[in-house]
Image (tube, rainbow over the protein chains, first blue to last red):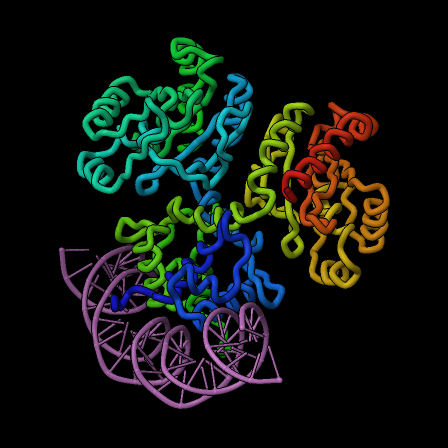
Length: 251
Length: 251
DNA sequence: TTCGGTATGTTCGTATGACGAACAAATGAT
DNA sequence: ATCATTTGTTCGTCATACGAACATACCGAA
């Protein structure tokens, strides 16, 4: 038992994350089963979360309430780009007439932290908080390309590198070549590696000391925009947007 | 000490929520000050959250990490409208060429749970998780109008009812009249009560038994669209979108 | 530069906060 | 109706989380 680890907090967060698309409502026993806790422990946490307003119950089934969003919002609103990225992103999406997003790396996934949808391409519902594997996304490639070697080794040691389409690059060797290219070019163009038809272009977002902290991208349909057109027409807008966000952010 | 209340979970969630726009990074002592906990307690929770991946530290200052979004995402992804609202919202925003949102009531606030920005009207950054007072928003009025009398009394007992502009309605009597009107008409049109220039129209989203669980709205600039135009051109689209979401959701 | 007061971070003995074994209640099949 | 199983709850107790006291860092005045 590590003396600086509060087991009850970890358990309570596990209970929140027991809920999800396949489990919108749960009983005490179901929460216990999904978290590996005893029924008595699960009950205590559910009653606590209910009293705090994060969970509601009809006496038998429990479900999360909107107040849980306050936790994620604490993160979002504390970020240096929070006040400045959204208007810039909206302007870019309006200019390009395509969906634009900002994401960060967390573990082996990218996590979307801002998004302006324009035209629907993907079958999955992308929104703030959505996670996708870094290796198959332009956003992920941009961030991976900026990692130090030790961090990149950690990434490869952990990442599953799922195949999504016939084009998905999954081998470490190939991904390292792709990342080196991104580092040299300053952008990543990923073509139908995550989903057939989806073509996306990303550039880095840097903090005041020049460190890559996030990425910004634009997505289009392969039938609509050629790769050359993306580089010619989209890349300058994306770079200008990234530069503007960085300037706004570091003001 | 209530035997079913896990104090450590409550404290841990307080520590997460100590962070925010004015407090992007905090030391142990600062967290202790903002939460009312002792430094030793604050330290333990920060170290726990760091080990869980929700917080990072340079050894002195702590800050939240994107993994915190997983908590809010558990809520979002467990909602019946999650898979179906976004595409419908995107279609409505494209048709109307205005920003569209979905929000729920939590306490005395509305909380945004989906949003498709189109053209920038408001000065504040609206996004998933953003809270606004229910009384001054079309989204809030729609949901308040559907509350049972006891719940509405609770709302009035708790709500601050801030004045935002010269037009903001704040008295209980006037708000009750406005809500009765909403209940009768089936929509709420709020005109420059939250912010000068902002005009918005909302309709309810209902679950399978007809209960209002959320609201969907469209916002425009008062200089761009008259109230009559909103009712004539926007209301049918909004109603169709709400109906479609309800159908999709209850399938 | 040194010193002293204050602020901040950390440790470890212990008590109380959270635990789970056992009991109570609910459910479903025969 | 009875019985076996599942689910929810209680309360004695111990191990988990606590905070008083110690250690370290910082800052201002002389």
